[in-house]
Length: 258
Image 1 (cartoon, rainbow, N blue to C red):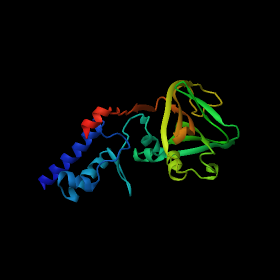
Image 2: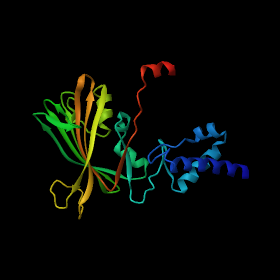
Image 3: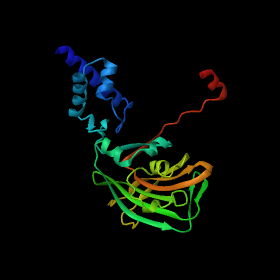
Image 4: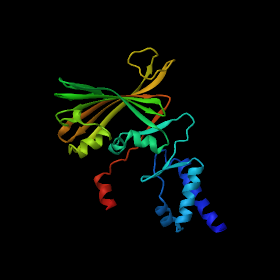
C-alpha cells in the first residue's frame, strides 16, 4: 500500500512540476490514465489516483469524453494566448476557457453584409477583400466578464453563404473543413490603446480608463486570397500573449538532419 502511495505521489508531483515550470500551461491536456500507465508502468488504479489528487488540489479539471486539462489558477483570471500560428487560431475560444475552468459566453452584436469590400493595414502592408463581405461582431465572455470584443470580416466570395450558417466552431476550422480552403498564412499585428468610460464603442463597462490590446490580422489562403480580416480588442488587465517561433532549417542543415 505504501509503495502504491509513493508511486501516485511521484506521478502527481511530476505533473505539478510540469505545470509550475510552464511546460504545461492552462488549457493544456495532461497525460491520460492510459498514458500514465504506459509511462510509469503502474496500474490504472494508481494512474487514476494521481489524476484525482491533481483535481482535488485544484491543478486540473476533468471533462468527460475529452480528457484532463490544466486549470487556470491565476488570482485575477489572467489568460495567456499564442500569436502567430495556424494551430493556435484553430483552437476554440469556448473550449479553451472550459478547459481552464471558466464558463464562456458569446453575445452576437452584428451580422451584416458589406457590399463594397474592406481593407486593413497589418504591419505596414494593406490587405483587401474585394466584393461582398460578412461583418461578424461578437462579445466574448469568461465567467460573465467581457474578455474580448471580436470583429471579423469574411469574404463571401471565398466562403459562399457563410452568412446563412450558425457559427459554432472556430472560423478557421470552418474555412478548412466546409469550404476546403488551404490556408497559407496568418499575419497579425498587436498594439495598445486606452478604453475610456462612456465611449459608445466601448462595451467593457469600465468605470475608469482600461488598457487594451488591439489586434489586427488577416487570414490568407493559397493564391493570396484574403479570406478574413480581424479586428479584436482584448482586456489589457486579463491577457498576455506569447509567440512560439521555430526557425527554418537551411538546405545544409536539412541534409545533415536526414
